[in-house]
Length: 288
Image 1: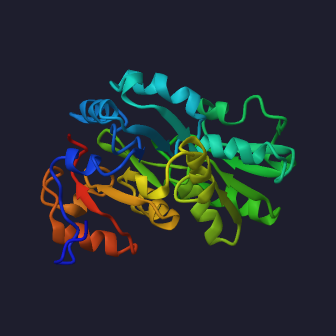
Image 2: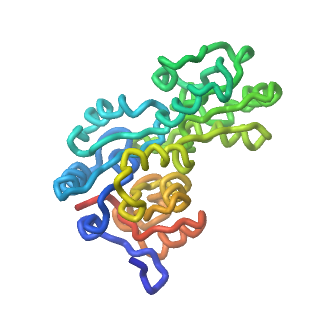
């Protein structure tokens, strides 16, 4: 599906693309919903794709395990029968830290709502000054804080030479009309001062290893990755050898066209080129 002009083609309907793939690795925030409500048409699209024989594996950088995601999606208007399964960065993170490779005691940097990321594991939650490593699931209060608020904290962690395990590689997301920072912003800041940050969600390999295990009967070229994150969804798909469909109506919408529903091929091509991203095409929203 290469455009001879060299520009990324803009699609208005997903059905012609859907026929070419047996499964989707579909991002959640920015593709299914905006953090407040499901996007118009998304449930219809996923339902029709599944009815045609396709499988939908939701792939999220949420720091919490996938088992808790369906209830959250129900509340946003995405029913359980719209997809087959869910994998999260939290799932991949739990599997890694449970091995004890970073130590057996950790300090949790993040909100209380993310406790499911580590609950039930053979590890000890402790204070910052006693921890073997840091488990970062996000900011303590993402409604008001940014990574800049953690400068002194990160300096202390660096002085102790602690590993920082990031359970959510996203830098920012849009929660309705508000842009909020995620764990990836903290981890990036820690790396900038020389700290060691470890990631398990998109675009990194561990979450894709789990995804391949869930779709073990399919070859990579039968699977399409769908997402709005250039450095997570698109980069991850490119690095892993999956075709990618870029949803422009998510985090990058302001740069892709005059309005959220009108992406321009020239602008989309430029935006993708900034991160050396490749996509078979782009859509404002995933509409059947």
